[in-house]
Image (tube, rainbow, N blue to C red; front, side):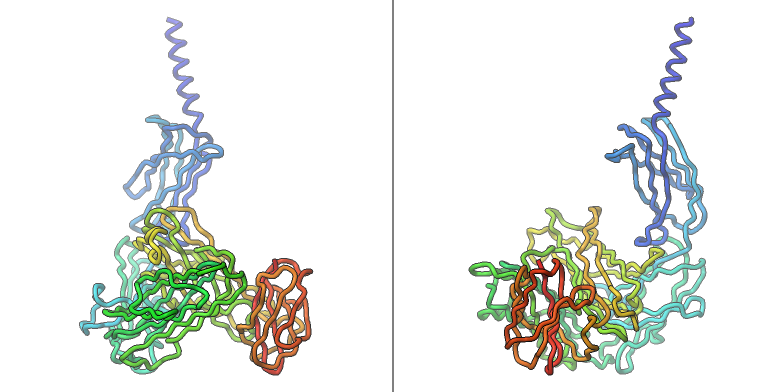
Amino acid sequence: MKKIFYLFVFIILFIGKASAQYVITVHSISYYPYTSCSFAVFKINTNSYASGLSLQTYYGDGTSDITPIADSGVVGGGAEYYHTYPFSGTYSVKRVLFYGSTAVDSVIETNIVDNCQTLSLGTFFDNNGNGIYDAATEYSNYYGCWVSVDSNGITVDTFYVNYNWAYAVSGSAGDIYTFRAFNYGSSPLSTIPATAVIYDTLTFVVGAHRTKYFGFDCLSLGYGNDLSEYVSTRSSRNRFDASVSIARAVCNYSADTLTMNLSPKYNYSTTYPAPTLISGNTYKWVFSPPSSVEFVYVTGVVPGVDLMAGDTVHSSYCLNTPAGDPDLTNNSVNEVDTVRSSYDPNEKTVSPSGILAPGSGTALTYTLKFENTGTDTAFNIHILDTLSDDLDVHSLKVLTATHPVTTCVLNNGLHNVLKFGFPHINLLDSSYHGQCDGMVRFTIKTKDDLLVGTQIDNRAGIYFDYNPVVMTNTVTNIVGWPAGIEDLSNITVSNIQLFPNPAENELTVKIGKGTFTTISVVNSMGQVVMKQEINGNSTKLNVKALPAGSYYIFVKGNSGVKVERFQKM
């Protein structure tokens, strides 16, 4: 009898000991500022890990589910999972840790779902005049308008809407938000609705809010058949890549033509789509039937010995339309690119780069490029870009993107975070050249009267499906003239030749036409680290003693000031 009793006690103690081996050590419920307002993020950690650990969560809204615990790879196990609540409010959440079918630990938490919502706005051209956005035939163009936002009759914000904008708001159920379109053209414009006002009421019910659109009557725009193009190039020692996006601010499209002159340093390799005509290094595309947005991808290869890093590559792009274009300033692009030894396919660029004039705000144009370098299709992509506090978020405009994109400005409690969403992008893998790349370009102004020396950094994180974030390079602008260089009103970025670039010991500065007297070398902090008189059209600089990094060459004289950047190895 004693043996049976002791055996029973041993079994109880063994089970208790086994159960006590697994406990919840850390648990949290949070909300990422980068997702929708009601998207709760649940995290949990255990003191140790074993196969068979799982967690059942009762969310307090009548639903529950089971999440397996994974090995953390360090100490214990963990899990991160998500839940969307249908309504705002306060919920009691219970989480129960199981080892097999045995409950071994539990926690109870209070989750307050914030009263916030994402309201979506878009723009379109009313092609058929029915006053309704017909998604199949009326593309949401990048032609847009400024919108003022009223909450319960009080103006709270202004921003620029084109294509699709997700606006994050907060408040109580029943609050009415009013969006008023303004500054949408130089002449009277027929809008849909005719009042140019859209209303949305907060409900905090998942799926209750649909995208609402401002429509434009193309014939009243006063812009006619306005074409515009945006070009992005990358030059390496043996390869050249260009992407061209073309937008039409018009309802009735014509068979427009793009002409590209490729640098003779490269031979044609592939394009997507195929050109209509090839003559030497000149390529033409006739878009028929046309759409509101066109994209062209071009690749060239070096026919012989690889180019030298620091060499320059020239290419040009010109748009023509048989319907006539009232604004030709955005129809031609001349690109001067610097050959690089290598580049990351996921990168960020800014124009203008380097040093900015102080005073009133400067419009910066940021370009984000991404490429699916994997071996499978990327189904959903989003980009998070933390904006500098020295940028005016209300001046933000999306210029173009290679795929339909949703834009949203969020706040993580410290900074404004710009989110670009590419849902259902289905970006093909790297074996499909010209179909595995993507790009989005936007412009934003610096704030007025920034202090001289203010540094504006920007980088972004690119998320391909559920893969880890891919961070881009950092681009930097500095406000103010370099110390020792007077305030100059006619400073320009030039095509003066610097070689070799990058330079290790000696840098040659070759200057074209004009009268110039001095060369100044300025570091990334705006400090003049070297100054030298100009000797003819070609001047050699001894840069051996300079620390490695980025520098700017300021060439000054009666012909003004030219600026060019070089890299010290």
